[in-house]
Length: 396
Figure 1: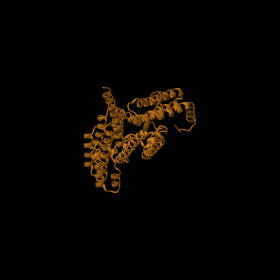
Figure 2 (figure 1 turned 90 degrees about the horizontal axis):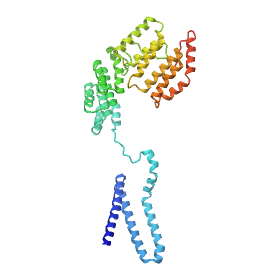
Figure 3 (figure 1 turned 135 degrees about the horizontal axis):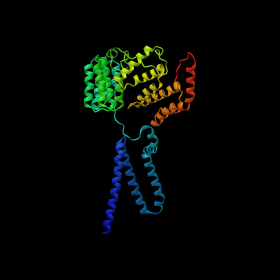
């Protein structure tokens, strides 16, 4: 009975260590760049260990001088041979923590499409071959947006095949569930091509509206709202110099830089017409922040209605899904108005501090913090400039 228990314990022990060895060997083979070479190393090492155990057993039986002298010598020799066999692997293991800092370690690299060949062929005018390369990548990566857009670009821009380009992207939109960023990118590109190649502004507006419908309550939907507000004039859209620029409508003058004096400031009629045009535009497009910002500076620069100016900028700041850079700009502009015209440094400070409280970790927060420290000096300098006759320079 005792012998049976010993056999069972031995069997379990050796099975456990055998399983561990097998797992280690399997994992090593999976990671190895040369599995055959690794197997040879393991077999050679096992043979040396078995040989060493057999010799050591013989020496123990012989005892005396043979065990005392030859035992350590043979053990050292076999250890050296095993060390030589595994030295490169042990060196790699010891250096792994350092090398992983630069090569990313053993984490598998996510496969990505490769379009360099297609781009090179397109530059050489080999459009058919370029499309073949793109389609080859899309067979492996059928959901990749870049490949579909590149394919459509070649069709519409290089081969004058607008119908084919629209079919590629329209089908891509129907077959894929795209996020707001990718979906808006594709729809904006189609809107741009509707105007440039199909001369159809209404269809272009439809594509931009689809961004609002498919991705509500997102930054992309807010940008689409801004874009639609400046796409009402068909003639402007058809003949503007920059095909990607949707900044202003033709019946509204271009937005003035908030730090520049308005040319029409001395002309009451021109100022009133400008104000009326902006207000009518905002009634139809209340989310147009660029027009609202222009109206704010019209109030501040030309009409001296500083409270109305700040109110318009507050409306801009209260709109949802505005980028942090725009919000910082509007807070700076509200502080500008107080520093230049009202001299209320405390209120300017409160406005800037409200941005810091709302966005403490924003990249623009340190700049605003630095400005708060010099508000008094800034306000005093601005009021001194305004008090000097003939000096209408307004710098921010």
